[in-house]
Length: 258
Image (cartoon, rainbow, N blue to C red; front, side):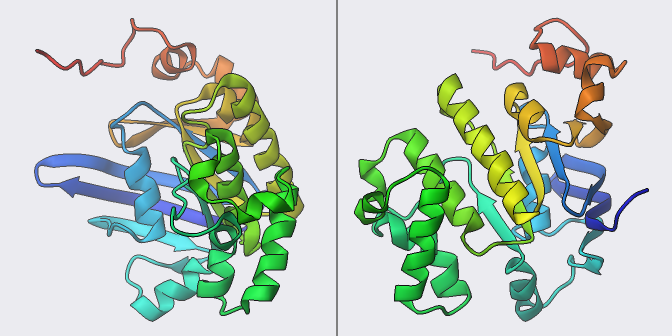
């Protein structure tokens, strides 16, 4: 029995001039579940995410968050919806000019108007949650390794205890061991919160670990979706080629010509 959808996209299209990026995206993420969207570069993963976040306006179609349409919201109403969200960006996207704890507490201070002392306590607790000691909170992001920056990004994503968390290529730039550590932390933190999550990645090890369900996007459409346990027997040649990283197959490689 399906629970109430937390994110629901129906027939979403988006073009940039003559380039049709999304060509009718249909996606549903049930409350408390984790959906991972896989696909190669330029297939529409990031544009899908940006449409849900409201950074881009779709040309047509419907996007509902917790049952409410969000494609035609006023700025005031959009801000209310954004308070439900947490986000781990691809490059961690930390503010270089702010100490680590302020980065983690940013949504609490700016979004919820919390006093700095209280926000710092929560930030330090969230840093501990991702395996970082309180002294790391006083450092600047530039003093951190890539893996530590990802942990700080995750701490920031969960700091406001959001209902929905988005993960944008969460393991990009990390070695396989640190990537696995981040994947484990994502699973633990999401379970702690009971959050709904939507992730985009081309890292199959990450997808297999953090997903309940996996959907594959190709040329702006969802070409397969199912439980992660079903992906190895999808019966879809495009999915099979992608998950095994084969150069030969139905997916056309857009090679740059000299």
